[in-house]
Length: 212
Image (cartoon, rainbow, N blue to C red; front, side, top):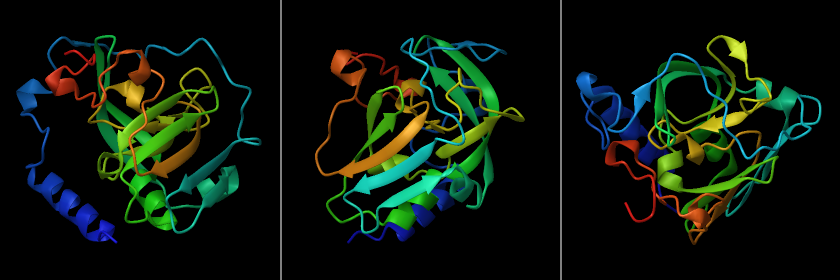
């Protein structure tokens, strides 16, 4: 089995040194083609799921040693952390320094214990949305499963009660109304990826569409 804890420790060390893939200098925080905004625009599939703290649950399953099922209280009892990161939407806006409060994705994934052949992840939302990402990317120290932002609980419109945030990717890679995290061996395209969006979605490479 890969030594995921060692991999995470290495990523954390690189991040602290400021020497990690995708890093840009302070004068280049806003990717090409993006415009900084101060508000928090709302974009979704036009479906607001009927989900709240009482009915919300999160499942982590697939190629894991231990399947995890959390309700709201169990999620809140996990170690909470704040992560400040920049948020890049493929629709060409960027909001800098958003402070997300929640649980680090790597903490939950380590509780589940990825199996050796787990390479990719599908994120499932309560609205039926899916998006795919490689497991290594999801293990970055800045990826957070968040219930609050900018000092307030997430509204339903912004993906509450819980959404996942993947700062090094365009925002569509972070599912709103997060329902499940599924680990598997082969990559599986998600909702937008099947519709021509880029599979990797690195904002600093302007990977908006599959032919970019």
